[in-house]
Image 1 (cartoon, rainbow, N blue to C red):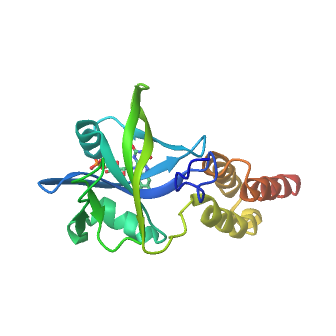
Image 2: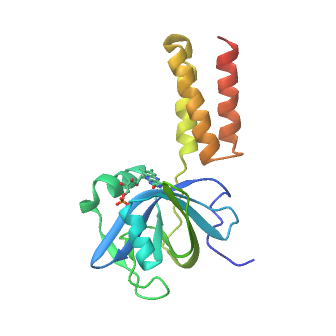
Amino acid sequence: MKDTCLHAFHRHWIYEVVITAGNVDRVAVGPFGMWTDDGMTLKGSFFKGSSTLQAIEAHRCFVVNPVDDPVVLHAALNRRDSLEFEFLSSGDAAGCPVLAGIPSWLAMRVTHLDDTGDMVLLDAEVVGHGAIHSAPLVNRAKGLFLESLVLSTRCALIGQAAVEQLRENVRVIAKVAPGSRYEKAVRELLALVTESR
Ligand SMILES: Cc1cc2nc3c(=O)[nH]c(=O)nc-3n(C[C@H](O)[C@H](O)[C@H](O)COP(=O)(O)O)c2cc1C
């Protein structure tokens, strides 16, 4: 099978990454969720009006910068001036920005854009990659499960609002890590909490 560098991506799980697009004159950067359905290509769903989406549409290429620290996602959203960039010098995505110092990156070429109403669903193939070392991917399920575990001990004290929050956490975990042990465990938590009420 072709090596697409996506072996660390569980199929259908959503990973929070920094996307960089544009060129040296105008860099677009932001945190976005990306996933693979087939282990070969990446998908993303972008709100229309996103300037990162506009840069991707204009250049047809962009870079996925996996991060293992959510504070970098915060910087990509709210502290963009603090970020530094390098620019790819060769390949299909030549000229695309990459986060400076990032442990690994994937250069992507858009293969399909689908207007789904408020959002644009994007498909892209890997056209290049680089790695100093691989970075663990950020997925929301693990942290949210930990928060759910703590919350489950407080449902008796807080009451229905805590149960509703737990339900919401089940929804999010099932969306970002379908079929995971986090989904199974958080459903168990919800059942335990609702049984005891
Ligand atoms: C962790 C995280 C993940 C996000 N994922 C998405 C996403 O998948 N799609 C999207 O449209 N916006 C997503 N957002 C919101 C965008 O990053 C946000 O709207 C940003 O302001 C877009 O910037 P832009 O208009 O410069 O592209 C996410 C935000 C965070 C913090």
